[in-house]
Image 1: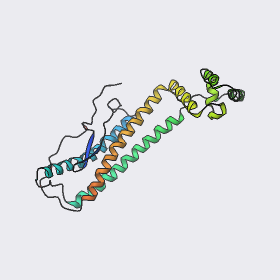
Image 2 (image 1 turned 90 degrees about the vertical axis):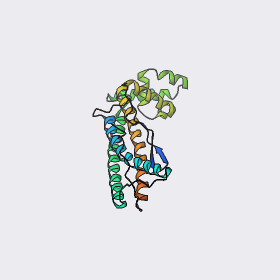
Image 3 (image 1 turned 135 degrees about the horizontal axis):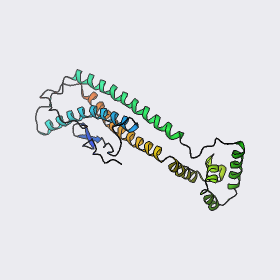
Image 4 (image 1 turned 120 degrees about the vertical axis):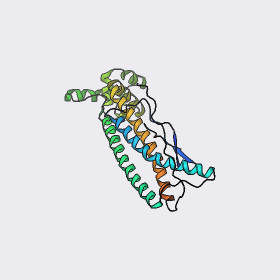
Length: 235
């Protein structure tokens, strides 16, 4: 894996003055500069953080003013603030749709991976059916021993666990083991994508919480000097 420094320097954000929520870190080992799922998710993550940061900065400025007994910063008139928050809510919803599309592609790819291919003859299919029938007469230890043989394993994994006398838990375990051996690279890509998706979802939940707070409080004016701009969370 490539050793990268995480582009997010903080784990949480301020969704309201004095109130924080989990923002999370982007996993530094995941690809960000390509065209694959993790890179697509990373771009969505960047745009989500850009939305979240504005409100976190504003809430931090409000908290500092409260703690120092100074006038609150000028965050703009409430009508404009409300309009911007609604626009950002739409942007966040569009980003969520992009993330959902990535998630569907990942799920589709994962579902397409099969432990064995069964595009063979009717005779072979009938032989596997007989093998499953025989497995139901075996002891548990005999069935586990048979699973070391790819022929017996393919027969068991062709259909439901009970048709081979195998427990669903063990059936899934050997299916997962076979998939890992057959598709190591594909499964690694799926796992990375799932991790990236979960990371973006965490950031989206934080941004949504801040937006909901902003929409609730844009009913009164907030006079005072504007807060100073700070460095972005993602360079």
